[in-house]
Length: 455
Image 1 (cartoon, rainbow, N blue to C red):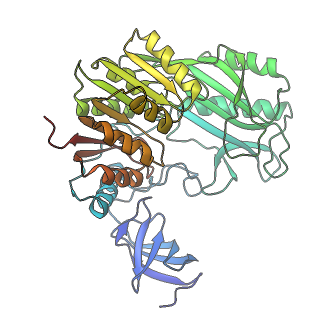
Image 2: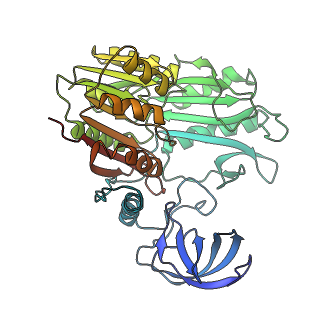
Image 3: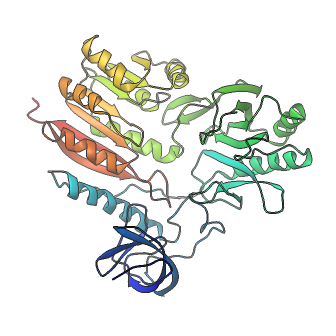
């Protein structure tokens, strides 16, 4: 059949893909349909055709799935923030488990059963970091919100059900100040205008708030007034930072931070530890689930007082400090220098003396630790970025053959790809998905590997 753009079809949804999209077949030709659920019958229009597959848009749901629910967000259809709000929460957990299982079945020799996804008791307002772009609406007025899915058009902010309500309140207050004082908004095409983003970080346990004003310049008109109004209106704000980003880039934060108020940091508590959080350092955006994830990783590792542990991609040392309590020594490696400084300080704050942190590329530092300093690890823990592990690091880990490996991953595709490279030497014991981002298609996984024939 010759599938063409703008043609209409009635199709049965036979499965859901990795991003939650519905999958249908027309004469064995695959059609991806966002918003459709397995088991539904829908009328669609074809919006894009490629050589191997096409994309469709729902015109009408003829037979509705029992898993479908009314969407509780007014900007849901256009926002790229969360894409599964039309599906009952328990069903999204099952979908995430199934998507990881599918990758295991396709790639690994050991077709182990992926565990059930660990969900949230209350999957709302879970994000402790909000990044709001600024733009100009159709009436020529400054607006704040979220980028429309796959575009840089700013959708005005309504009530968001995954952000912290206080973040929203502060961002809207700053927007009103911008309007009242006729402060310019950055234009990506002309690269003119001042305000680019407002970033809010909230310490969930401490209620401390960091407010980051990302600007295309050095100064903000009426800066002193803005500072005094914000700290008077929101007593939780502990620091306000001007972040300078004058580059033509999609990266939100620039490299230069200037403190307008406070010392440039906030603190939060995770488990029994206090963490110092800076503007540029990575800190899990869902600390409730992060605590479950880290405790799961430590439970899997079964660290003893004789164990030396490597924590690769350690960030500000969150999981390093969790592990240090049980270990002889923990070595943390992280590429962001500021994060490493925070990790060292976090160890001091918590009275932990058996950690050592290195700033630099994991591939290079790990190579140096193993091959020059001749340090061996009994347990290796890593939580890499979406691209996963590099081959050199994998080879170095295989060289020292740690007793156990705990692989925390935010990308199941690269996780399973990497696990296949360990299979000859390690038994993959279990894979547990953790729902760090409810109502999105993202899923974190915690995986345990044990060295074969380990005495």
